[in-house]
Length: 212
Image 1 (tube, helix red, strand yellow):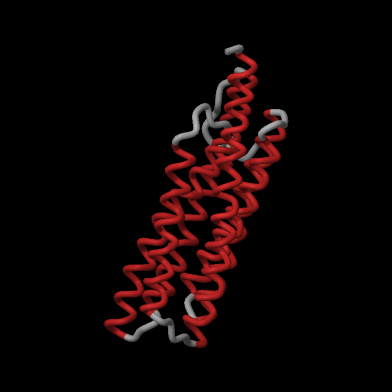
Image 2 (tube, rainbow, N blue to C red; image 1 turned 90 degrees about the horizontal axis):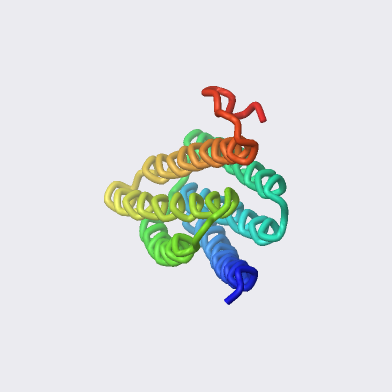
């Protein structure tokens, strides 16, 4: 096979994988929103927002496959900023529920999180199998890993909610999801910054991650 044909095969594989994880995340986001509404759960709604942002990122990743390295970094930076904004919204909603009160349904939380965990594990495995991931695809992998961890937290919170009848476990997990999103967003922005240095062949200086 020619070298160009190998590249084309890789691009086709990446597109196929990204389309799969894109639609899986759309489906899971809808499930989180619907169940989260009826379960009165901040954690489920937080994950619904998270998966919605993931779906947008995967769409950007599809567009970035045939674009320049600079465009890919821009898409990755947009992804990172989206995570930071999303995290702020989740924390604000958790504070509102703490003040006004809520009655999350533990069983519904556990069931939805279990389904999402399986789907996110499938997405993560598909993304991990991809070779020569660029900065944007590395961001996509970060998202799926974060989602899988979050699902485990929801299951634990659902158990505690069922045992105690309190809403704080749901709020704690919602804020934890926001914390994971904050870390992921910063990590993606840092990776995009390092990719700039890598392309230019320049040395990274500590503390200038957000300077370029």
